[in-house]
Image (cartoon, rainbow, N blue to C red; front, top):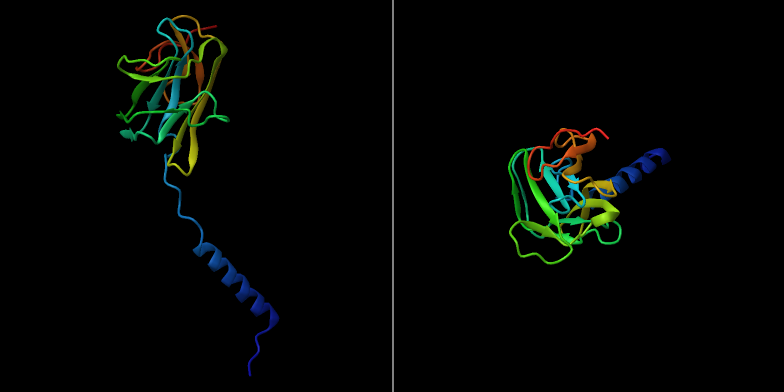
Length: 176
């Protein structure tokens, strides 16, 4: 009768355990692709009120209602404000007005009221089970009237004080 050597049994046991573990691994979580949408520009106490602009640097994208959220409290309330269904074309922008009260005017309005304390904003995606922070951005204090803090150019990692351009390509860099 053939008896396998001890190292052979150990290797077989290890391979069997690895195979079982891989068979029960969860499937890849569905969700947003990194860099598909970013917080692009923020104005705090501007003449037009507080607002945050989202930007889609890639192919046309639909943000499904109930799956996308914006918050000014990423740790305590990551899913604070549920965004409606939004369709963003390639290199498209959408402005979210940060009104502390319920607003009936047209446009996207979030009850964030970021005001004088500045803004620590985060964009989340959730399927009801998982939640993913897609992007985050901060503005410390108030932006000067008709100015904003944004990416320059749109969608990049470089941030600067800009001439405010809600819903359009980011404006000129303003020297401090």
